[in-house]
Length: 247
Length: 52
Image 1 (cartoon, rainbow over the protein chains, first blue to last red):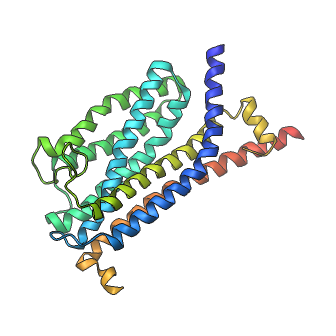
Image 2 (cartoon, helix red, strand yellow):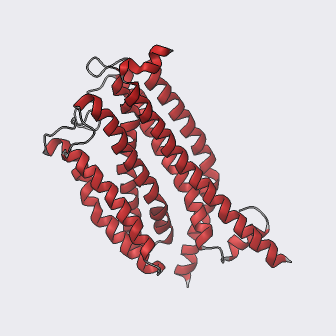
């Protein structure tokens, strides 16, 4: 009885926390993306090898980063679901999947648009590209699995197991450029050495990556609040807030 | 300005990338706001029904 009450309370508390946090994060996101994209398009110098085409990096790398970050968030939530049957973690995982899928698609699409002028091809079965495509399929499979199970407890558990199994793909994506020396260039930021990218290009790139990450949190918080309302519409605190007109 | 827009001859690759990014971002935001609007409207309708 206490357990059940405790769980309900935590979604209620999170609902309130998200309500306070979301507007501030939205403002932060707008600033980060505004400054990052401005610097990326206007301040960062032209690349001596790739000309202006390299500016795709300012949307490509952040979306690829986000595709991995969201997956790791989902995997972490899935762990909480398996170990503690935490309802809130199941909600966060559920609303994160479509966002993750959309940014995985964006990483692949912008990569394709960058690959055409630089590599001479839209697509190649290169290790990095293929493993990122598999990530997209895992996201889609995860959403399909969720949609196909009606029982909430079974749905939470089955999808959490799928998400945790899919984690093996994450290091494969990260290290694909080192393990298989195919078309995609190796890491230039996240490595043990110091980044091999000039600060005038690195700064807007990091601002954009951070901006994308904050954007995910804004959308995730918004959708989490909606899903909490959808799932707990019969609970007294939701009905109270609805009656007072402050949902 | 024209020079900027031409992106050194890579305009056909650079601008679709940024346009697609804007599209994905705004779509995520739109669906999130739409979902909230829908559930809030439903709950408030139910609340006013139970009050009367």
